[in-house]
Image (cartoon, rainbow, N blue to C red; front, top):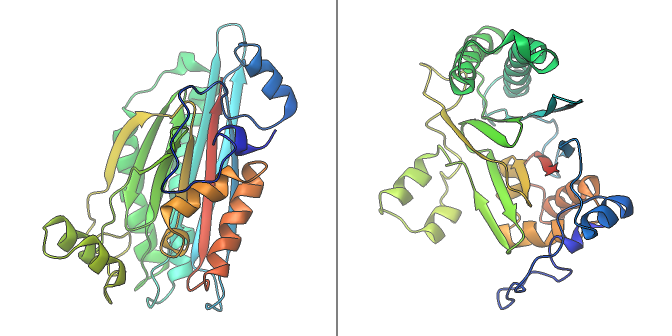
Length: 299
């Protein structure tokens, strides 16, 4: 099966309207499709993920870094889907931008996996702190790591930690997390930490003016730049049916949200969708590095 069933098999247009009933859930092959059609649940509940990365058309090196890690534990009493997905975009124009993004990503991913994998494997160990507080601590550690390894560098960071049917997000900068729903909605979960976005939020400029503002990429929150800025951290249900999308501004900055939705809907599977998104950004000129992670929860 391809993703078109999820998106109702039609291209997205501004005049289109969603069907009255959605009879399928997003699945990846014919066997899964038959299971859903029969109304059976898919057990154990598990995550599927894919990613794409490109230097773009106008850069000579890649300052984006991404991380994708998925585990499923299934048994009589334990059924735990676990995923960790991170995108970090080194700040263009700053020294060691690529070092900053890679350092931040490895610092956050390493700390979270060391803490959580024992719990995933053996839940009798228990968790001694809330996930949001854990994320806050590992991002503070990443700030110190970036400042030591890449002085003068900086990076965005958007991380999604999926445990069961919940996703906890941590966000600094202007990489984004979206959810895509079968009723033709694509919703940004994160808020850009840019000066121009702040002006838009204050009503001083319009969204149209913000999109073409010459300083639209200037950040007021990022890892590695001066004093640690508080990340946005929150927990939300994983969309079911639906998709979680993480991407750098090399994608969302050149490919409109409606087109992102349509491209995914016309793709045959998650990996194909990621590659098609990267290709679309490059076809639009590829002015920046491009990174994308697409995730769905089955069951």
